[in-house]
Image (cartoon, rainbow, N blue to C red; front, side, top):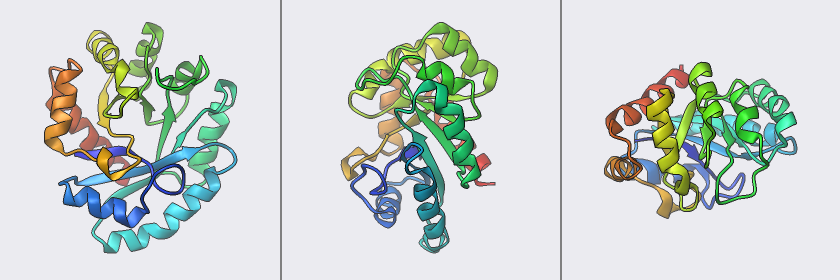
Length: 213
């Protein structure tokens, strides 16, 4: 398991990065990305903190990516937020999609899929035009292990099968109880109707290693 969507105390997560690393590896995970909730008020601050600790984290033998999850930014400003994240040193950029569980502004999915991002997280009742755009722009779409966000997994799975965009599976981890291993990831994917679940797991690893370079 390579978990590409994890939150720390730098936003609303419960754990400091070193404890995330220890718990991830104790569970058998091979890599992860810290992608704390961010907008224009904290993108530079989050990335500066994560980049500052990365050298020390490597000494823990923890392989991780530094990033943000752009969250509740108005659709018209998502592009500027993405640009700022890359400028400030992000290695991975995720956008908080239009989940069923939260009042994300309509149009967020579409705006995000037109920008240079890596993952659209838990996009809920994703539209077919958005599915086409995800495929065209090579953006990964998330199957979520998180309660509430997972309610749209079935639709995302069906659209992926129809339109051919690539899936990843992530936890959106906020607390230790959210961490999953390979076995749990397989069950979540199969429960969402993803037949080729092994390919999705491989996508997580492939994207992680690509961005690490």
